[in-house]
Amino acid sequence: MQRPSTGRRVGKTCARPTRANRRRSACTRWTGIGATITRRNLTAGPQTVRFTGRWGRTVLRAGRYRARITATDGVGNTSKVATATFRVVG
Image 1 (spheres, helix red, strand yellow):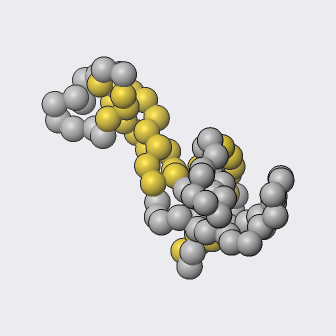
Image 2 (image 1 turned 180 degrees about the vertical axis):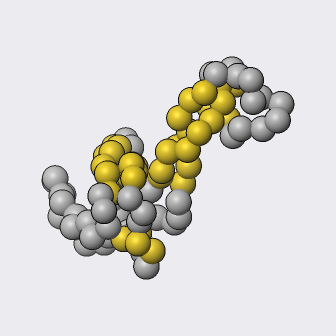
Image 3 (image 1 turned 60 degrees about the horizontal axis):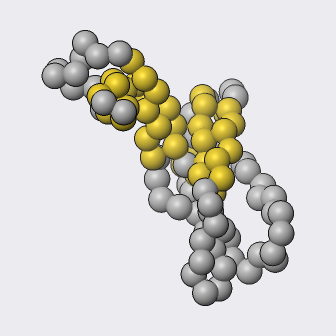
């Protein structure tokens, strides 16, 4: 789970704002907000997971977020990362 924060363009990346790069152009930097959540024993194919507006025990503040999702099989092979962007309201 990630939330957007301000950053500064340094080369091809969006870096954390510092005194040294404060005059560079602004960009959106996505920062992680915690550990991963694991779902086990799901069947193959498309899945849906109910979302309550909480990340673990923490209630998410209103704003934009994005979830990066990967699937892992029993052997340990992982899928490509899928990204879902959403907004928490209220």
